[in-house]
Length: 206
Image (cartoon, rainbow, N blue to C red):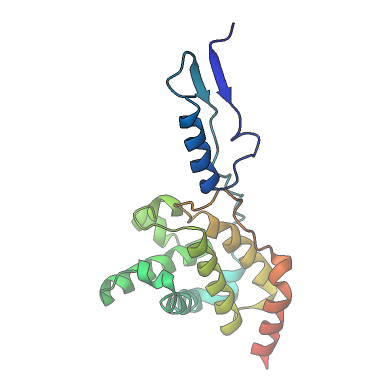
């Protein structure tokens, strides 16, 4: 007779929120499912699987150049400062500038420029690098929304918008290091933002 009792509720998708998980734990304690006669094994559970990130070609770098890429990163961070995500940045002006310049180094390299980021800081590893700063799903959505706003407000080459968006959208998920829900992270595929960004791109040409 098998002495191990398994609980497959996590695997079968019955738990959809932390509130349910707490209720389940309370129910288990009341039912004496722990500390009983048999060993009880709770299945392993995967939080979520990070989607692949298609890094862009160097076409964007050739179209924009390093200076405009850095201006884009600064524009994005100025927008972030006006949101609750701004509270995550250093209050000291010099420290904030250092953080933004570091992010700009990453974008310049990722878009096809010189390896200025990896030579100074090593690999990108965004989730690990941000781990000291708690970033949850809503922070990620704000970060991405402010990039959409940035792309609408700056002179970004519209022929490369799709390639850029298809990079930063899954990239933004890699920044999440604190989960507040067991639901899947919401995706914002190019098809959902294409019309808005392309129309904005045409307006910028006028």
